[in-house]
Each structure stands twice: as C-alpha cells, then as structure tokens.
Length: 564
Image (tube, rainbow, N blue to C red; front, side, top):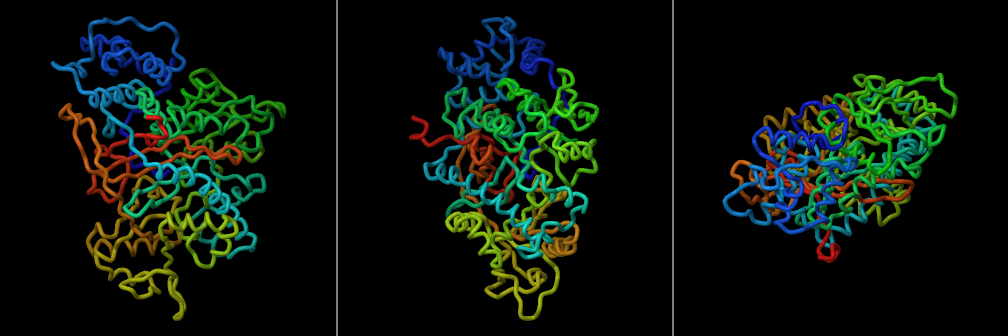
C-alpha cells in the first residue's frame, strides 16, 4: 500500500452492533453538550432550508444502510452548535459542513477530519475523463503482461534478469508459493495508479495493488453525491465496483461454490485503515453481500468438514461466518507478523478460499516501470500490449531505472540515463549532480516498510548535496535486500481550491498540486472505474500524499457529462 501518507491517528474500534450507532453516538455527544439535533432539521440546514427529500434519503442510505425505521426524536427547534451563527451561512460553507457531518456520521473520524474539506468535488475536464476511462484497460493489460513476463523469465523464455530483479530480497518460500500453477493467471483485481496532472499532461508515479482509500473515497462520494454532485463512478461507484469482484465474475470460485461470504482481512500494520474498511464492509452488507472487516486472528480454519462445506470461518460481531473470499489488506513483507497467515495461504492453495490480491510480490514492485522502459524488452511489451497501448503507457509512466550497483563493462552505459548531457555508466557518478540536475525521485521498489506512505521517497532537488550523496549510497548498498528505483520527477500543475478552515470557522482558498487516484475494479475482463480521489497538497510540497493540510475530494464529471 503506497497511500499510507494519509494515515489518520485513530483508536482501534470494534464493529458497532448496529450500523447507525456511530451516528447515534455523535448525536448523544451533542446532547451531552446541551445540543439537541433532529436529522430532518440537520438535513434542512445542509440544503439551505429547502425541501430536499433526495438528499435526505441518499444521506440516510449512504451512512445508515441497515438502520431500522425507528429514529430517535430530537427537538425540532435546535441546530448543532457548530452550525449556529447570527446569520445564515453561505452555500459553500453549508456544503462543507454537510460533508463534514456526513463523514463524522459514517464513523470515519471523531470530531475533526484529518484533511481539509472542500465545498465542491475536484473538477475534471472532458479530456481528463477520457484519459482516465482509457487508462483502466491499459493498466489491466499491463498487469497481465507483467505477470506473464515474470513467469516467462522464470521459465527461460524471457531474459533471466527480469525475475532476478523482481525476486530480489524475497523469501524463497513465498516465491515458490506464488509460482504455483493454481495461481498462474491470478493478478490484482483492484488497480490504483497515482496520477499527477502536469502542465504537459498526466504522469503516473506508481501503481498500487493493495491500495488504501477505498472506504475514504466511497464515503466522500456518498457525501458529495447526496448533495447532488455528478461524480466519476457515481455516489455508489466504489461500493458497486468492489462488490462485483465477489459476485461470481471475478475468476475461479473456491471448492464448494459461492455460499460463503467475504472477509476483508486487515493486519496490525494496516490498522489505520480499519475504520474505513469497517465502513466499506457495512456498505457491502447493505447490498446483500455477507462481508465483514476482520483481524487475521479472527480467522479459523478446519479440515473436518465435507468437501462442499467451507473450511475457513471468521469471528464477527454477528457470530462466526463462513468465508469463501478474502480481500488481503496486508503487505507481503509483513507476513511473518500476520497471525494465521500460513493457514490462510494453505486454504488458498487447497482451493478452499480465493484470496485477492494474490500472493505475488512481483506484482507489487515499482521497478515494473523500469521494465516497461527497458530497450531489451521493447519487443515483448509491444506484442503483449499492442503498440498503441505500449506507446501510451510509456508517455505517462516516467522514465525509471533500477539502482543496480554492479559494475558494467567499459563499453556499456545505463540506457537513456545522462548527466549534464553525458552518458552514465556508474550510479556513483550521480553523486556529483547539482541541485538543478537532481530533478528526480529515489525510492524503494517494494517489499519493505519503507515502500508505502511516501516513507522512503527522496526528492533529489529537495535535499542538500551531502544528504543526496548519503541517500544514493544507501540505495546502492540496499540492492540485495531492498532494491531502489530512480525516477524522473514530474512537477504538478497548480490548482486553486476552496476549503473549510476549522481554525477560523470560515472558507479559505489554497493553491495546490493534485494527485489523482482512480480506482479500477476488474471483474472477469471488465474494467470499471469506481471513482477518483483527488488529494490536493499545498503547492510548496514536493511529495503529494494525504496530510492534514491537503484537501481530499472525489472527482466530478465534466459539466456536459453530469448534465449540469
């Protein structure tokens, strides 16, 4: 998971016994402060006092899908203290606070969001939308081709160094498991690239096969959709796209059919994402899918059952549930710290459960971009992807190289890498690069606690010369355990956004650079764009990720697409 930069400081919560309890808890907190809140009054306030039954029904279904018909009665004359003012708030303020309360009602934070709230979604142009609609099938083709490239390299049909690079630092037992015939064609079914809009076009900085943010994007889409905004994927696109992966169209079914449910397994290392995954599971249950977010220790495996009966079970607030599908929300580098990981892998190997993303570490490496640009592999990519897709991906995926410290023959150079117009044959030549020449990013390729959340990202022109030399040397000496990649830096274009300032209680504006993260869900060979999360950071930030000073919002359809 590379999107860990937007981690929230949250305490661990157990799944509520009733889906509306987070909101009722919020209401009770308001009551304890002497504030009585009536849901219709709150909704009326959010919509400027207008009758808006569509907002009301969408809001309630978005955040309390299984709530019963009984809603506690509250005073019809009170409004939340945070919303009270001598004069009515403007429409933009009203929208910000409506989104704020919708996210709070969803249980995604206690009081203050870990990001800035915008009154409107992030705007896309028609050209942007076309790009993102095309990008999903391109990346699906790329994922399948990368998987084949690796397996062909293992068998000697492609250069051996391909799988050597991708295997570097991985336990042999994991590699042997991942190469099993049963899993040969399995690839991640959720694809999320991080895309930077620049002045000259789009640039994909990396791909994430185990992405966070599904629940955040889904809840934001529900909140803005309830306000009437036309969004990419729609208000429920994230839920519908994710649910489709487990409704019988997502690939091979486990032995015994599809009578069991879905366990979203979140490890301790991914604890900060448990709240949004709890929310996601609740929304999935509202669609009729038996889904729960569980800790690995909540799984139970047995071989005492007949062949057509589930052998994997999960302890949930609703009792023990049979499991046929597992969404793996933990990193492969952390397997040793994941309870019952061996039992889960055994169950998948025996065909008793289907796990996605699959246990394939080569599918989670940033150096895949370097393979796409490698001149010796051009023929493979052009055939596997079709030439137009290959050319399109090379335009949007930045030049990337594997930081390999091994010496080259005197007549050899590192392909397409230059310094001051001269070819480079030794990575240590770059230690002499000036700040202006260091328009680059250095980061771990994968299979490391430093490979997500921007933890290990070094922006070359953002650090002094001495630090650059030390970071480059560290990357070279880490090659055998954690290979690094060297990537061209692309500066994002500047957008002006409005947000609600929690400190002043007023609207404020900010110039920032955006990272756009589309979520593609693949069922069979059908690629669905469920939604796009925009993360807009202050323009002086070099690394764009979720932070308290960033605005998070779903992306809106162009006006003509939304019928506005």
